[in-house]
Image 1 (cartoon, rainbow, N blue to C red):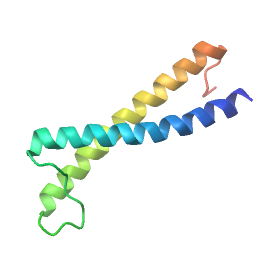
Image 2 (image 1 turned 180 degrees about the horizontal axis):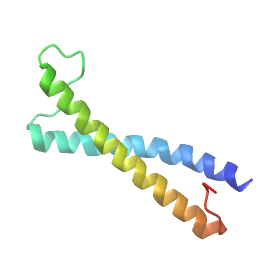
Image 3 (image 1 turned 30 degrees about the vertical axis):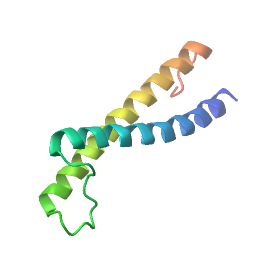
Length: 87
Protein backbone atom coordinates (compact mmCIF):
# COMPACT_ATOMS: atom_id res chain seq x y z
CA UNK A 1 0.00 0.00 0.00
CA UNK A 2 2.81 2.40 0.87
CA UNK A 3 4.49 1.81 -2.48
CA UNK A 4 1.23 2.64 -4.25
CA UNK A 5 1.01 5.92 -2.34
CA UNK A 6 4.63 6.65 -3.24
CA UNK A 7 3.99 5.96 -6.93
CA UNK A 8 0.90 8.19 -6.95
CA UNK A 9 2.80 11.00 -5.27
CA UNK A 10 5.64 10.39 -7.72
CA UNK A 11 3.32 10.89 -10.67
CA UNK A 12 2.10 14.19 -9.28
CA UNK A 13 5.60 15.38 -8.43
CA UNK A 14 6.71 14.38 -11.93
CA UNK A 15 4.10 16.64 -13.48
CA UNK A 16 5.05 19.47 -11.14
CA UNK A 17 8.71 18.90 -12.02
CA UNK A 18 7.96 19.14 -15.71
CA UNK A 19 6.23 22.48 -15.20
CA UNK A 20 9.01 23.74 -12.95
CA UNK A 21 11.75 22.73 -15.36
CA UNK A 22 9.89 24.46 -18.20
CA UNK A 23 9.72 27.69 -16.20
CA UNK A 24 13.40 27.47 -15.27
CA UNK A 25 14.38 26.81 -18.88
CA UNK A 26 12.44 29.83 -20.13
CA UNK A 27 14.23 32.09 -17.65
CA UNK A 28 17.65 30.60 -18.43
CA UNK A 29 17.02 30.98 -22.17
CA UNK A 30 16.04 34.63 -21.74
CA UNK A 31 19.26 35.31 -19.82
CA UNK A 32 21.57 33.36 -22.12
CA UNK A 33 20.09 34.08 -25.54
CA UNK A 34 18.50 37.43 -24.82
CA UNK A 35 15.30 36.27 -26.51
CA UNK A 36 11.85 35.69 -25.09
CA UNK A 37 11.08 32.26 -26.44
CA UNK A 38 13.35 29.32 -27.14
CA UNK A 39 13.33 28.01 -30.69
CA UNK A 40 11.08 25.13 -31.61
CA UNK A 41 12.62 22.37 -33.71
CA UNK A 42 10.34 23.36 -36.58
CA UNK A 43 10.99 27.10 -36.37
CA UNK A 44 12.29 28.22 -39.75
CA UNK A 45 14.06 31.35 -38.46
CA UNK A 46 16.51 29.37 -36.29
CA UNK A 47 19.43 27.28 -37.46
CA UNK A 48 20.46 23.81 -36.40
CA UNK A 49 23.01 25.05 -33.88
CA UNK A 50 20.61 27.23 -31.93
CA UNK A 51 17.88 24.58 -31.94
CA UNK A 52 20.20 21.83 -30.73
CA UNK A 53 21.75 24.02 -28.04
CA UNK A 54 18.28 24.96 -26.79
CA UNK A 55 17.27 21.29 -26.70
CA UNK A 56 20.44 20.30 -24.83
CA UNK A 57 19.98 23.03 -22.22
CA UNK A 58 16.32 22.16 -21.80
CA UNK A 59 17.15 18.46 -21.39
CA UNK A 60 19.86 19.16 -18.82
CA UNK A 61 17.56 21.36 -16.76
CA UNK A 62 14.77 18.78 -16.92
CA UNK A 63 17.16 16.02 -15.83
CA UNK A 64 18.47 17.97 -12.85
CA UNK A 65 14.98 19.00 -11.69
CA UNK A 66 13.67 15.44 -12.08
CA UNK A 67 16.58 13.94 -10.16
CA UNK A 68 16.20 16.50 -7.36
CA UNK A 69 12.46 15.87 -7.04
CA UNK A 70 12.85 12.07 -7.20
CA UNK A 71 15.56 12.11 -4.54
CA UNK A 72 13.65 14.48 -2.25
CA UNK A 73 10.52 12.35 -2.64
CA UNK A 74 12.41 9.17 -1.77
CA UNK A 75 13.97 10.78 1.30
CA UNK A 76 10.58 12.15 2.39
CA UNK A 77 9.02 8.72 1.96
CA UNK A 78 11.79 7.16 4.04
CA UNK A 79 11.38 9.79 6.73
CA UNK A 80 7.60 9.23 6.89
CA UNK A 81 7.59 5.42 6.68
CA UNK A 82 11.05 4.22 7.68
CA UNK A 83 11.38 2.42 4.31
CA UNK A 84 13.38 3.38 1.26
CA UNK A 85 11.06 3.22 -1.77
CA UNK A 86 13.58 1.44 -4.01
CA UNK A 87 14.23 -1.46 -1.65
